[in-house]
Image (tube, rainbow, N blue to C red; front, side, top):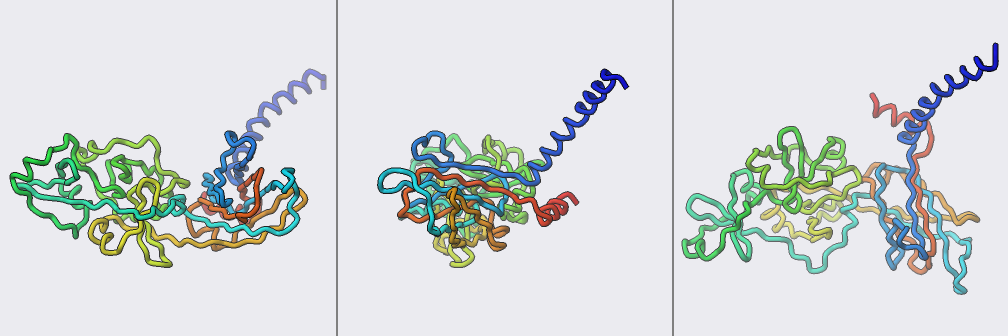
Length: 339
């Protein structure tokens, strides 16, 4: 066999092998993904970890991970980096991003006033009234809400908004074949049933939306994904304390049960449980440790991770790598997903 024929066969073999290797790499990357986040004290613009003063931070990778590699570099008294030889206490809380929203101090939930004039209903604000155009929208403001009548003088004195009142924030709606959640007056699309179930919404609470109702709400440019925080209008119920919380402008407002039942009864709470997993991590000579999450934190809530490191240590560099280990267990899990 001549050298030219051998070279031709090698080239043809490489042409066929290269796409196969690329496909294998993509499959392995999808099956056993990893994501890395870093914090550098001297290069904050390049950091994608926001480290609070008390050494807390939250991360939301795009997959559900079980294995976390954490690398720390500390600053000693003489301002030089030093290795960490002693064990450190690491607290990990796994949940939805919304569960990490701060609790608004002295937060007051929006209270809705609905009044009737002749045969029409209006949403009353401090400065104007908005027409509630359909019974569907009216029901979203609570079945137990008290509706009073307006006098002609009161009606005339309150300006009428050019905008119609839409569904209450947090309402789940279906328009044509798409599912949305209303937040800040926008329709946020939920493209996947898996995302809907992961965020613990209730299919029975989805309201069919007519075309004239859909036009009231603009489309949000960003859909809800597996790693998304619950949007404004979501009601969270802590299953351990039985307390209700409203997500409003990226913060939690504690709701009295009577307030919830009167004004937010149409929004079914997303039940959450907030638990920490305390871990004692011993770092090696490279200041690295592996955190393997227990089963209780693997499946319980979402895929956001909240970390609490010792507040007294001064961190100069921090690297967190989420990974899904190569194991028969993970291969079996993947196989079940493709059945």
